[in-house]
Length: 131
Figure 1 (cartoon, rainbow, N blue to C red):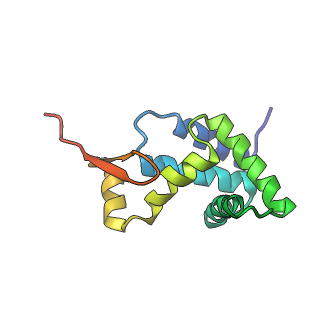
Figure 2: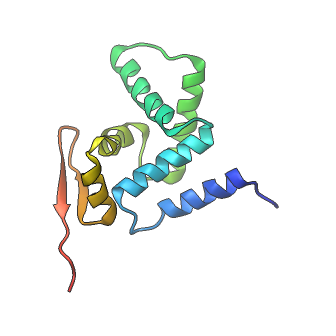
Figure 3: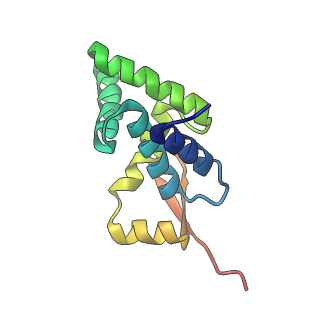
């Protein structure tokens, strides 16, 4: 069986997500990239769908069929990844991407660790080098 480039990239992203040493920023970006690739839309549109879904639910509003179909696909992908659902990803990971670039850079290098505590706050743990 031969796979195309899109399928190969999806497989590589899923394998990358299963690495234990993946930091929270890398994991968040990889999940968004996988969702983007699977839905055929860019990452900002994926983020928009996640927030629109939440806002519509909070306001008791309905979404159009296209968005509902995309949400179903997102839920399916999260079930395959096994780490998040739409709500937990939106509340615990999307806020990371709003951090200043210098903090994101430090997180990517593994100098601090992101620990999501609750919906009201998150903390960071500074890693000390092993000697």
